[in-house]
Length: 598
Ligand code: NDP
Image 1: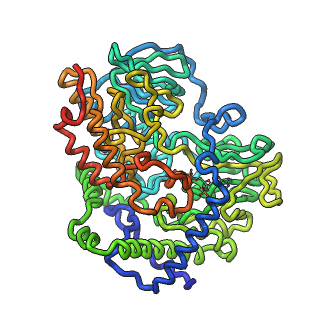
Image 2: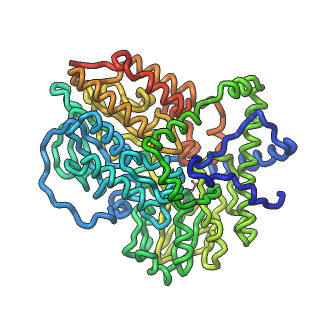
Image 3: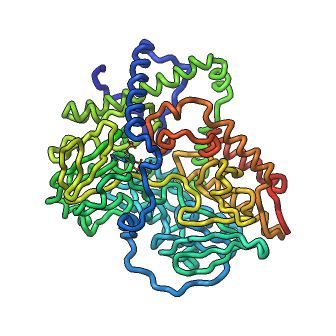
């Protein structure tokens, strides 16, 4: 392979007015190398994928998120200063949110703007913040520019400190939103909703919690997050390990020390090399006596190139600046009709080939960056991702690759096999023992599951997952017929956006408008019309599975670990712009889309 040229920077961050640039491939532009070059790499991608699929035919069931019994400790809240003692609550609110992350905060803010007073958040953690409440590992930060990711900046009069916000800043912003919109007043923390049942006679939702609460609400918003419940790979012997261990989203500073100072005499292992591990490993690498990184599939590590916010730029921002910026953002996803025509006029095969060739060029730049930074050749080879861009979550970090030049940091590359055995003292791979004091699982989360911990029953007591048994059925991923006054956020059949908060804001606006329409017209309930639901399921199906891309990707949560799945059981792939259009079109026509009951 040719010599590295890391100077080919994607120019992601040099102007705060820009969005963090995402790779976009233009099939109307030809690539320069002979086709055989790309074909050879594509064949290697396929080989690497097949190898992984053969090692783990168990697909999604290789993981467990049933963290009970011996595994319960992996889900315990390390951030709760103390257990909140309180008597069970029995009362009624108008709007109840299950979960207190960005979904709830954004929608609640919009409900407040529309005059809704009675709002309750019920949250498992001890504060609002969701993912940013839980994920406090050293290095936690967001990969979307902070001026786009942090919502309600205008409303709160806040400008983030740098182009990419760090975890603590984002968490503090969540708390500021909750204060600004008085969301703490009725909030209940350290409480998990276990039952959400529709009372057909009273036309209210009846909820129960693990604290014995009996709550009722007119409207329920299921805001439990897209990646909320930690999951662990089932590894033989994991319960035998005598050292210390935790999941990355429950980082144990008591053990590690606030600045990881306690790790200086410790042998630390980490399983997983996804987006979390990429941020965490540079910190562990500097602090630990020895760090062993157990890798199954490398992440693609692109340039981060963060910059502090320019105070002059911040001072120049006029009211409404964030809205303007986000509007541009959506427009940016609008397909250019001329370009579209040109692309559509191309033979399908050529179009696909060009997309793939550009994608391969992109990944080869990632490879060159590894060669340029990582000194040990064998380690560098093992850190190269052999799959198309976006088969896995791309990552952006400037400290990860250099960490492998620290002599005490060891990459244990399992070449796709993964760690399959743990013993009393540590990890075993191919007969070699790696004794450890601390083992961190950076093995990810359950993905987009609606109603985790919760039994949701709508009309005729039908449980939501039973309704979905033969395929998901929703309108916009938000409403599901037979579940009146229930709104789902962050689940499948909605558009996926790298900037998740933008997608959640879009859903939040829609939900707040629906609730407003229901209240203002004296209705008690709003529900999806079955025909609207059939239309939306059809839209989802139309845009899914038209390419073989998912099948060709290396396994990961983006492609359901390589498992076949129904076309409707995933995100709406028509694009964010089109998703927003659909929501906009429904506004003012709710009576056509939904069923209202007086
Ligand atoms: P992921 O699910 O992305 O990663 C899990 C990792 O564990 C993978 O590398 C996986 O390997 C590995 N793994 C699983 N089992 C084994 C095994 N037996 N042996 C070795 N490795 C194993 O979880 P993350 O927590 O990293 O990220 C989840 C998501 O959270 C991200 O995709 C992103 O959306 C979000 N996030 C965003 C951040 C940001 O904005 N910067 C930061 C952190 C997270 P394999 O790839 O082979 O399956």
